[in-house]
Amino acid sequence: MHRRTGPWAICFLFVSLVFLMTPSLVSSAPDDPSLVPGINLNIGSSADPANVFSTVKIILALTVLSLAPAFLILLTSFTRIVIVLSFLRTALATQQTPPNQVLIGLALFLTLFIMSPTLSQVNEQALQPYLQGKMTQSQALTAAVGPFKTFMAKQTREKDLKLFLDYRGQAKPANIADIPLSTLVPAFTISELKTAFQMGFMVFLPFLVIDMIVASALMAMGMMMVPPVMISLPFKILLFVLVDGWYLVVESLLKSYQ
Image (cartoon, rainbow, N blue to C red; front, side, top):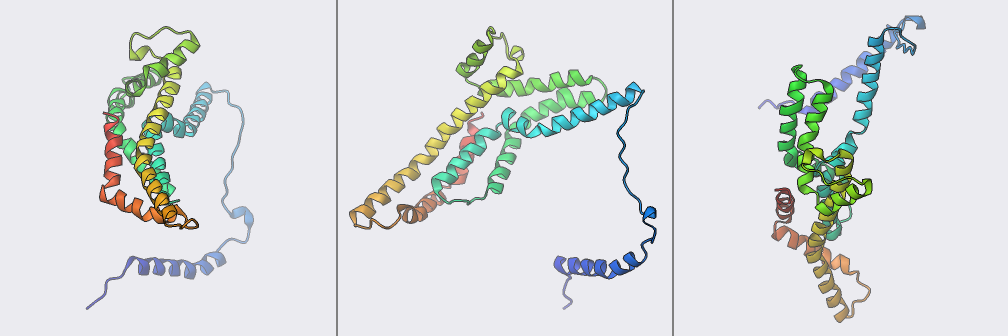
């Protein structure tokens, strides 16, 4: 029977062809270095206002992209999710299992899942009208902030919001749209931190009980030199698997945003 060529065999063949072609490429290179194409970057002034405006827009776009991680952390559900997952790993005492890449990836996809209604509203109310030329850039940004404000205000405690309003000497807003974003974002963040730590405590509690039981049993048997964590770890993993722990944790995170 004819064997199918696997992907590794194809990759090996491709790399071999590249190495075989390399000498011919080197030998065919021009002797004159001036004939080798290069990249030329020039920084200068321009008398055309349109060119200056385009440059400013590019700089502003790069600035927004550099701040994108902060927006992801402070304007979405990412903070609560990643803190709860970190508490879970610490409670299990599995060191780097699951690794950080897995926890961050899971937190990102759960954030996209939870934020999908908000992102859909932003797309319908701001992005699509802007792309169709029905809105200016400033109007689109104002329309895009509205759904995020609604999401954040729903998860923000009134006490936290009042803290920042009183500091600025601002009156209580009549509606969500009147809340300044500079006030709502820190209030939403500390509310998320408190909720995340409350959920982390509830996750920690059953594993703490197992550690205490194992430590008491080892002390009763006179096994003082045996680390309790080494004995309790298999029991904690077994309990977590039996109760379908990942399902329960993710379910709790999803329901906390309903």
